[in-house]
Every structure is written in structure tokens, then in C-alpha cells.
Length: 230
Image (tube, rainbow, N blue to C red):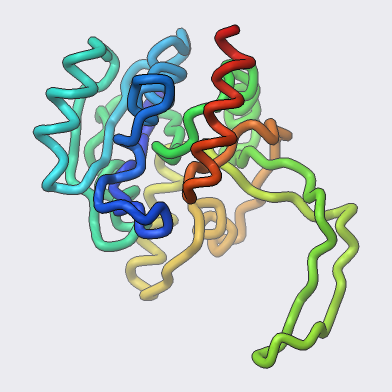
């Protein structure tokens, strides 16, 4: 099987409060994106990485990350779109024509581990659509437009979705095409597959697999690095 990974890193870091793309911010002297790509680079099952960044960042990313750290599995760097969904679709169009399974991952999640990746791949061979998720810790409230609570779902059956999300290539490509035709914008890729009536299998991941979004996340990430590389 030919397995591709699409690493999406075309964000602008607005919630981070910086003009610099958050994946280029430094953790222990190296960019966030370095750690993300390194996890996939070391995955023996993976054949290629397609990196999706904003058009303005392509040259910088190639020079300062891909070439500098010698990521040999990064075969293409492509421009993202206005929305994450468009960026993912650009990545889907850029993978190798031999692709059987595709992993879609946020570039700002640098702590994905090898065990979870391997488990996700194996499950995708059976179920064709797999998400990485963790049980919700907090009680969740559903509110109305005025912020009054209207429901408290049982958190026993609630999971917080992460990435990567792993799919049969044709399935996720068709799901993106259908969403585009319908003008539907989803918050992740699994919901696009759900719209086709296809079930999504969830694999339990790690609470460490955070998405770096705010300055507080950088502090947490530095603590994680100390435990990983101590």
C-alpha cells in the first residue's frame, strides 16, 4: 500500500497574537513544524509527505525547514486556500497517483506519537475512515443564542477529535468533491465522509497531541518537550 500524509500548515496564527505563522514559532530552538514533520518522517509505513502552506511561505518553508532539516519524505510543498478545507483539497490533488491511504494532519500538532499513527493506519485498512480522538474531560453544555443552557449531553459518549484523520484516498477525495458541489464547509475532514453516509472509526489518541493555537499552548508544549527529551 502507498501511504501519503498531508500536513496542513497554512494558518495565520491570529489567536497566537503574532503575524508569524504559528508553525514557525520556536520550541526549544526549533520550529513547531519541525517536530510535526519529524514524527511522520520517522514513520516507516509512510511513503511521502505533502506539505500545505500559504503561498507566501513556500520558499521560506522549503529553505528553513524542509532543506535545513533534510526531510526527505516531503515530496511537494503546495499552496493552501482561504479555508482549511480548501487547503486539504489542494493537498489531496498533489499526492502521488499511487496513493491508497492518506493521513491528514494539522501542522500545529507536533506531539503526535508513532504508536497512534501506526494504529490509525491499521484501522484505516479495515474501516476506510479513521479519526484520532480522546474522551472529553469536561462537562459540555449546549447553549442557545443568548448563552442559556439548553442541554447537558452525557460525556460518556463524547470524544474530542484530533488529527491525523486517515482515509481511503478515493473516499476522502470524493467526500471533498461532494462538499464543494454542495457548498458545504466542515470543521474537519471526518464530517465530509459522514455526509456520504460512511461510518468513521475513532482511535483513542493522547491528551498530549494538542493543537498549538494560543500563547499558553507554547508554554505547555515546552513542558512536554522536557519530558520527551529529558
